[in-house]
Image (cartoon, rainbow, N blue to C red):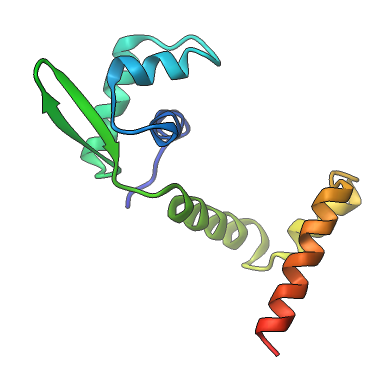
Length: 124
């Protein structure tokens, strides 16, 4: 899959909330957070179709859009890409930076400990 811009991601994120959806439904979801122009959203939808990130089906006079990319798969790909670019593929410096800045709360630490414990159990 080709790169998805930040604006395209916001449109895709609105579609992940509930699909299939019409352009007007997607615009309404996006407008809950900030003002989006109809023409802009439709342009972004067309770009996502060309990038094969979403598909559409014509139903009467409307198009219904559906994601072709699963959120989890996209998140994994982007996370791996970010960690590779910023931290040479190592996750420890990422977590260390958050810990040094006190950006980790007790729930984050507990979740990380649980992940590490599960990994140790499955990889011994």
